[in-house]
Length: 590
Image (cartoon, rainbow, N blue to C red; front, side):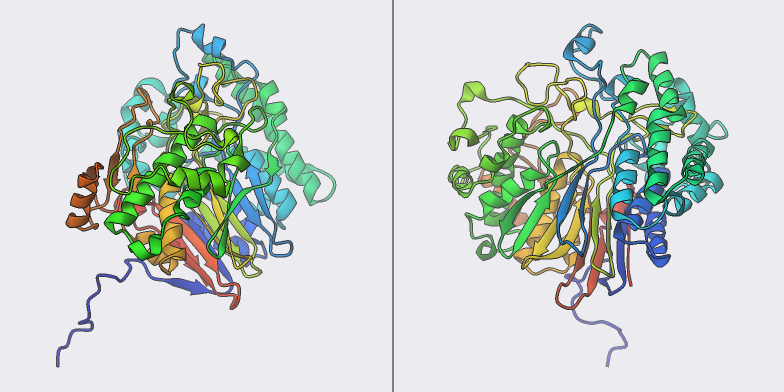
C-alpha cells in the first residue's frame, strides 16, 4: 500500500480552500483589511460597519490601487428590508470643468494624471453616508484599524512595491523627480521602501484623528457626529488644503466644489437570469453592461455547450462585444444625460442583438444597437467610437450573521494618478480622464458637476427571490467580463465560490482602450493558458485573434454568499492577486 496521502487526481481541486461559516464572511484585497472587517463584526458592527472599516484600511495599505482621493460605488442589502440600494459613490467634475477649459490649455483630451484629471474626492462622503444610514458604530470605532496602520505603520507588500506600472518600484523615479509629497511616504530614506519595510503615513493619520475629533466634539446623537465628520472634510480645513494644492498647479478643483458635493442613493439596475436576480449600479457605471451581456446570452443554451467550450467562449465573447458597444454609445451620468436603460434590457431588444451573433465567425466591428427604436443596429453614421474606462481598483464584500450584505468597489486616487497631498496623506483622483472634450452630443462630454463614466462595478444577486451573493473585482474594462464569467460558473455550472473564482478566465479587447491613444483591437481575445489548445485553435478558425496571457492574470475576483435556506455563509478570494503581485487578497468565514 502506498504511503502517499493522496493518489486521486487533484487537477480540479482549488488552490485556496472553500471557506464556510455562519457568523460572518469578509473578503478584501488585503489581509489587514479582512482582519479589520472581522474585528468590527466582533465588536457588534454589522456588514456595512465592517465594509466601511475594511475600506478605510484598504486606503492605507493598498494605495497603489485606492486612496481616499478616489471613489466608492456600493450595493447594500439589509436583511430586514431585503431591498437593494445602489450608492453613487462617484466623483463629480469641478464647476470650472468645461471642454473649453481644457481646449484653451492646448489639450485635446483630459490628461490621465495630475490635477486636471481630479474631481471631488468621493470615497469619504460615500463611506460616511452609508455608515450613517445603515451602520451601528461610530466613525471612531470603524476607522480605528486604519488609523493604527497609518500612525504606527504596516509592512510594504509585494503589490504595493512591485505591481507593474502602479507600484512604488516603478513610480520611484517619478516621485523623486516630480512629486515630493509622494516621496516623503514611499521613499522615506531617499530610496523606494522595500517589501517588508514598515512605513507610516503620519499625514493620513493626522487627518483621521482630526475627523475623529470633530465627531467626538459634536453634541447630539450618532448621526450628528457623522454629519460633523462630513462637514469637517468637505467644508473645513481639508477642503482648503485641496483647493490650495489645486490652485498651485493651475487646477480647476476648488473648495466650493467640495462644499456642494453629495453622495446619492439610487435604485439599482437589475435583470432576472435563470433563478436569480442580478443588481448593478446605474449607467454612470459600466455595471449594466454585465446585465446586457446576460440578457443576450439568455438566447443561447450555454449549459448545453459546456463550460469554456469553443462554442461557449465564442458566444460569450460576441455577447460582450455587443454589450460593450452599447456601453460606449449610451452610458453616462443619468443626472445630466438621458440613458435608455430600460430599453437596453428588454427581452425583445436583447433577442435582436443575439441574432447578430454569427455562430461560426467573430465580427470585427463595434456595433451599438438602437434601443430607443428597438432596432438591432444603430446606423453607422450615428455610432460613437469611444474610450475605455480604466483600471486600478480594490473590492470589499461582507455578509454578517444576520444576512446583511455589502458590496463595495473602492478605486481611484491611486499613487500613479497624482502627487500625494502632503498635508492629507493621499493623492487626488484622475477619474475625469474618462470624459470627452468632443463631440458636444457625446453622453460623456465633460461638464460642470457631471459624474464621469467609470468601470468600478460592485455586484449583488438574489436567488429564488432571496439575498444570495455579493461579488466584484478590480480590472477596468475587464471587471464585468470577469464577473459575468464567475456568475455563469456559479449559476449554470454549479461551482462553489472558490471554484468559480479560480476557473480559467478571458477578456476581450475588441473595444477601445483606456489610456491614450485609446486603441481598440478588433477581435482580440486574451485568455489564460489553462484553456485547451484545440479550443484556442477552434476560436482562431472562427476569426478571434487569440493572445494567450500569463496564467493566473485574468480575474482578480472576490465573493461572499449566503445559503438562504441554511444560513451558511461562503467566502472566496482570487489567488491571482498574489500571483500577479497586485495585492494580497484575503477571505475569512467563521
